[in-house]
Image (cartoon, rainbow, N blue to C red; front, top):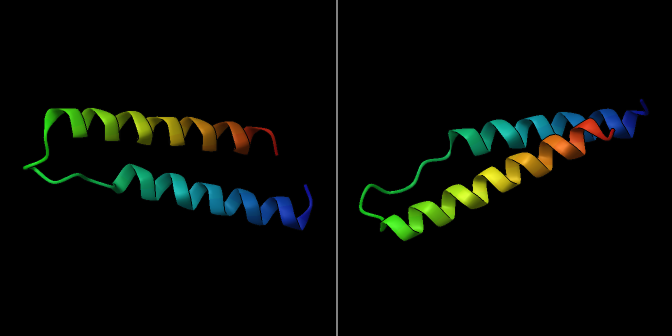
Length: 54
């Protein structure tokens, strides 16, 4: 693993942790919450795949 890949992997892990810690407002609509969850889960999947490919 190159230093560049190591730094990228480190950033991906930080991004994953930040995504997992995000919350959405209690007053948000069900549609917004579902949309946000789908986006967050898609981002987590994408970042995990990117990490695995390093």
